[in-house]
Length: 65
Image (cartoon, rainbow, N blue to C red):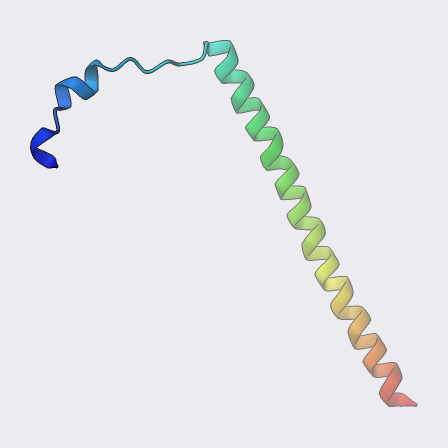
């Protein structure tokens, strides 16, 4: 309950942090993964466009005969 909430006690809890070097490594890894995600998103969008074009081509071919 809110009555037992003691901000002072919460602030006294130690919060372990990785070294600055490790924090930088983590940030670099996350940046790298975001770049991969961006590249995958571009490939997915391109695949969608290609599949739509293929479908239109197939339909056009089917109805022209």
